[in-house]
Each structure stands twice: as C-alpha cells, then as structure tokens.
Image (cartoon, rainbow, N blue to C red; front, side):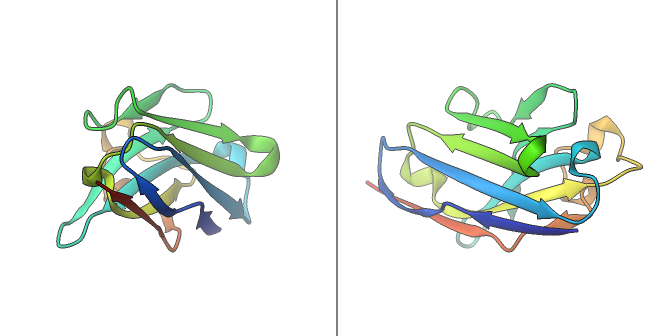
Amino acid sequence: VQLQASGGGLVQAGGSLRLSCTASGGTFRNYAMAWFRQAPGRGREFVAAARWGGSVVYADSVKGRFTLSRDNAKNSVYLQMNSLGPEDTAVYFCAADTPPLTILSQQRYERGYDYWGQGTLVTVSS
C-alpha cells in the first residue's frame, strides 16, 4: 500500500485548506484511515481517524474545525481544515490500517497504523 498526501501550503490565520491522501494497492474500502501531524520540535500527534462504515473521531484540538471524509471510489481520504491558527502549523501525515484492523482503542495512536504517507506541510501565518 502506498499513500500520497497533498494539499499543504501557506495560509493566513483564519483560513482554510483541504488535504488529500490517495492510496494505491489493496482494498481501500476496508482500511481505517487517519491523519496525524507533527509540529516543529514536537512528536507526531493524532488529528482524526475513520474506519469504514464507522464514525469519525477527532482530537479535541481540532474538533469543530476539521472534517475528515473519505471517497472509497477514489481511494482517497480528505481533511478539510477551517479556522486555521498558527498552532496548526505542522507536517500532516495520512496513515492506513489494513485488515485485520487494530482494536478501536488504538486508533488514536501511531502504532495502530501499518502504512504512512510522506507528509504535506501546512504553515499558518499569524
């Protein structure tokens, strides 16, 4: 499985961006997909995740501002980011968990995912 993330860039505070991640190989509709991010000098942190047919879960820091969606026909997952602030500046990574899926309690952790994209940089200026 290969994941290709795109859509990052420079945006002013209060603005919006939409990240995309496209998977190749395997059966995408069976994957659990997630977004993580890594700010400069910090570890990678969970942003959002969705299992097929399941609800989406979000980190508290992005709830109400970010929306994860997926299009199984396009083998893609998206992250719509609104009301961006400088604290959202980070490299954003998409990740895939392939069957057999990790238990639900692990979906907020890096160890719950098998494949990672290369990351796309989001910079929010104040």
